Length: 371
Ligand code: BGC
Image (cartoon, rainbow, N blue to C red; front, side):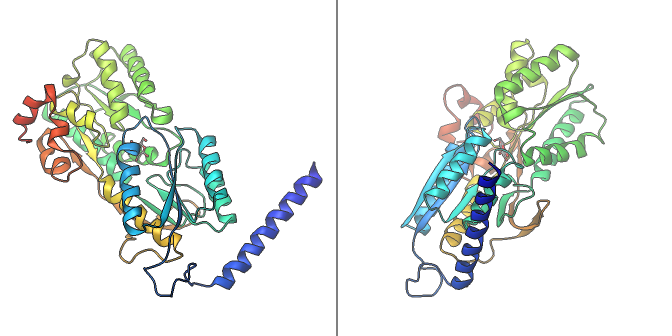
């Protein structure tokens, strides 16, 4: 056993050394040859590994926008796509499979910020660069990070909720339904939200971290909160994203509470959330323009697959992931309420009026000037 282990680790050392020699021999040149000069390099395979499918964004926005941009920039590139369904070991296997297939770059949105470090080490053994997509991989040697200003997301949620409650002259407490404890973003959203709520006149009566960001678990948490504080024991709800907001709102409805009387936050500008906002069931969401996020990841991935540097002007920040200062692309989130749906998600083409204004939402759309 120990002998085998020793042999394995020697093998790993030899592999790393050999890879190092190869790299040194390659220098900074493009791998593909192809007549020199940047930009026109050949194809290669790119892995896109997304974390879950209960939240709508991944399959409806991130994946198609990423794939479209890669195809546009690099018609010869292929994409290895996988969704981990919130299972970190499944994600580990998916990464392993992609590496075995010879991908040249990993674009990884980690289920678990900490354990994804093992994936990064594995990729590095094969000289594969890693882009941490949307969620930060902590304490690992990643090459780039692309996301939004996530503390700001939490602040926007907190500010909208507190000012709405103040405006309504509401008295009472807030219930907080946070995201998954394994997601670094959830930690940042929570931090941003607390920085606002904690200095407001409102107390937090109950607070939960929601495993896997699961909407059904959020619903159970909200049911527990309502049982604990009573139907009239809370004035509003901080929900970290639209999925958890949907769960919290369902719990209110089944307890006979009109959700319009308890402002609830969200995030992602999911279609269902935009419709709930229109009819007053949810107070706000945070719009994160996922198209530019996915496209930035595609630009970066294509460059890395070709052995080139990041496209000029793309990287605009640095983020400390506990191990290093990671060159980052950080985008700006925007708060959305009924008043600015038209100027944000509709104007931006994130949703078409025809998608939002179906059936029972038509009248509310008209009222909000959405056509
Ligand atoms: C993302 C959110 C998403 C959540 C659940 C977060 O890391 O930034 O947009 O709602 O994960 O998947």
